[in-house]
Length: 601
Ligand code: ADP
Ligand code: ASP
Ligand code: MG
Image: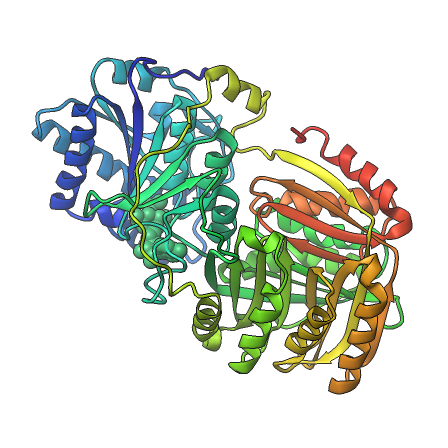
């Protein structure tokens, strides 16, 4: 792949206009004016456009009228036409304003992807043609959301994927900034259409935005944020209706000491529980490998051991529209392992809070649980990571739950501050640096920053907790009151009546944590407390791990082959953690380092 700054003497800007920003001819003309103005100010300009308005939805509707499960290749052939309409019209608009513009499809640019139709990943982008056109004074108008595979089949990147096209182009062209023009003023503390009291946030860090986007903040396609982080591209999310600055997604965001910086809702989730899974190393891998092969994003994987230690229950969530694919995928493993899929609960939503401040400050999870309990909201599954807490709740109460947590962390009271377009001390990566970062990998291939072993913690499990609001709140309030810092929390779904809550604490706090947990067990009539003083926590951290469905699965595979059993798991976009027995820590670390050797930076 050749990667070059288009013309090193001129700044380069990529501007992306989403569907609502090109919904009709007047809007296309308005967007074209922004592009022409940017060029007149001395920039080289690449414009990336989405399909007009709701055109992609319309095309999907048409396909479904003809075939309930249309072939994915043909779906891509169809959906890519939406963007093709927009680029041509945008080029005409630019021409009408007296500037030079050339429209290109993904294939014409040379956006090469893998062959996973409707959710393809970008392997490489060639820059020659775009550069030559830019150097010739053109505004280059690129069709978002699409590419071609090695056989020139048209592929698409997944819903919302034009953002990813834009940031990827910005990365390979060494752009100074990528502007995402949309129908809101920037990134809000939560979706302002769901909670009107949401506030605009001026700066968000890449990691926070990665979590937020992957947890439901649809303002950016999460993979666009992966590119931003990987290639150090500042992303400026702003309104296409005005010229005011919006929100900057950058490395070192100034977040004014906020512990929680955003909340998000993933409305249409489904929860799958598999019971009677033999409690032996490798079983979990057999279940998830075929799901990963189908590129289904698995989230909130939780596991709880049975009392007899012979079998476990594994629960996980997936997007609701992938239930059929997931069922098909696991069928073989269920038969081989002799386990059973319980009826799917497709009436759940995930509520999450995200913030860098959580990594240092305790008290976020228990505050969230307490307020949800007071609001009568029951949590089916809980998972936490260093910078997020997620709870699975039933869909009817999801919006109320979001509002409750949003207000608990004062996200509705953020004072407006003036925005800026200035990105401090940021320069595009040099072509050499981009190539160095890729090291022969595809652009969206997995990159892992670190694999770490923490063998200073203990595990406490409160078992058979009655499935009603308030127990988790009481447990973590009491534990916090005892001055114990809780690291990882996993509540698994044992059955519709009971749940298990597992958490990790520093070994020095173990006895106090167990005593408090026992008290809560007595208070609520739980089954009891089980615990393990010596555990090891293995963490794999990197970029976009959850959307790279293979990461958790790769961990299961490596640990299974090494004969190591898992006690708990939690997944997030930037880190996957597993808990194993303390005696297996070093072996587990070695197995993981081997497994991910080719992806480790
Ligand atoms: P586009 O067509 O421009 O890509 P999208 O509909 O994909 O627009 O994204 C913009 C929408 O994202 C907003 O209209 C808003 O409803 C939604 N959204 C979700 N979460 C957030 C958030 N945290 N901040 C801002 N907008 C959000
Ligand atoms: N048109 C595509 C979609 O609606 C891509 C995008 O808008 O980003 O999902
Ligand atoms: Mg979008």
